[in-house]
Image (tube, rainbow, N blue to C red; front, top):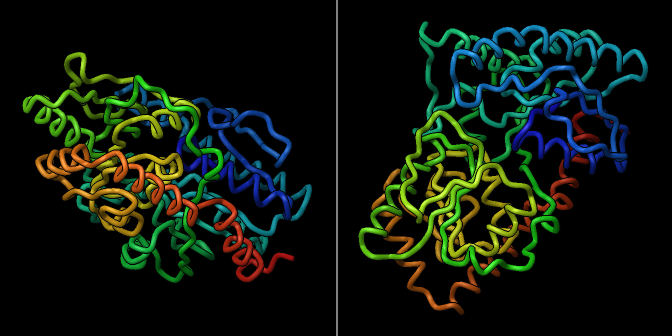
Length: 374
């Protein structure tokens, strides 16, 4: 099962690689269906975009109307698939509890259910800690607790980072086996291409425009730099969210959702790529930027500290502090070109530990050992 966005990219790449050795079928909303491919079978569920991007009454009604029918269709598609050819393993993300109705079916048919925790609704990314929704957010509350119920019914639960493994053990699993399996990218596809000189004098941000991603911190730090006379453009890319960012003037711009090729160009060409998230379960944007040879400044949250060695393959600032972010940006701008290029080179080398070819070996062992697949 897959959704659009980062989870969708993960599942698409995983399916392509696993299909080299195993028979793979992806069941997905038609909204999230990728370009036609010959690597794996794809079953599309006839639902449009039901995500809650941007909030609003219409989007909330859309979520409510589609909630049960979509999940019932997922179960129906799995039943039909299993009747045609026996299914050994189902992997489903926890987010949105899309696989909640699959738990009973997989148990009755001796199918191993693997739930992949990417970013649960109960996780407050700004702290990080577990939050409780009140009666004012009934749909979110229902989804959050259905996610937890699905996780606890799974045979195997996996998380993408070591630091999130500790949080998941405490809050999200009870009786399920918990494994660390990192996310990955195809680093060759994110390798730097020809640089665009117009992007040279900019700080680049890519991500959903919500407070938890740290975008407001970055805008504040950039405003401070401009007040100090630093002439550096801020370019923001990604899906609009609930946060009003408030970009101002000709030195701050929003470029919308970019293609992979456009992202690679910005990552590799920009003076600095900033990833100020308060918390992430895995730094997918961080790894993409590293593979492209970006000069990265990231928040010093637990996950990013696993990935960035401060001053070696990137730079860290105190999470939540726009003043410290400004100071680190100033420090990086003061580096020589030789020093910057060395950090960029180290970032590329570090990204290889999250390359798909390194990941697929551990996932293959999981299939063989945990699911007893031949």
